[in-house]
Amino acid sequence: MPAMNETKAREALCRLGRSLFRRGLTFGSSGNISVRLEDGWLMTPTNVSLDDLDPARLARLDAAGRLMQGEPPTKESFLHRVMYEERADAAAVVHLHSTHSVAVSCLADVDPADVLPPITAYYVMRVGRLPLVPYFPPGDAALAAAVRPLAGKHHAVLLANHGPVVAGTSLSAAAGAIEELEETAKLHLLLRGQRVRHLDQAEVAEIRRRFGG
Image (spheres, rainbow, N blue to C red):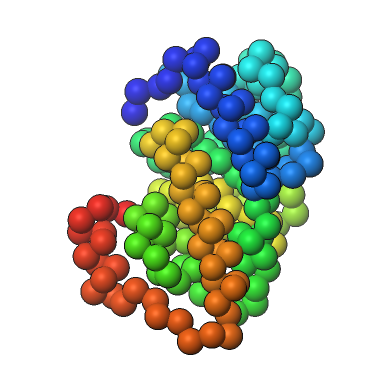
């Protein structure tokens, strides 16, 4: 996957951070974004709001995740590293604590192999299957070991009592997928207790045949 020009990547990452924050998809200093470069990746710094990112202050990491330049990265940088190591097509990774996705991650009755049902075709196209990763404390390196076997098979995972992590073939693809995930989580919660028509297996298979995912 061709890496984005570094200057453009810095600017695009900061624009996305501001957009996510101002639309209420993240808050405080929560959430983190990264973009792959040819020799490593750029990442949002720790304890910095996504609404207040400075292109010059972004953490620049080498391929092994070591800080080479800029401010220290988020303590969850290992989640991004696992996604990049397991997914050769990943050009960007977004992790949010978006409200509805986090709410779904706290439910006790979800299918851990595929947390959200196929409510819409766009969810199937952009997210596909969404496995649940067991709970670990924030920053716990053991979380990387739990995510790794799933990352090669799924570009999106949901961390229990925490939030989603989504890799994409571009920054816009990763952002679009995590936003679709959040909207589907919202729909799922709104529809709980109602009789719901989900897409059936044949309909899901046809979407995957036409659009992949």
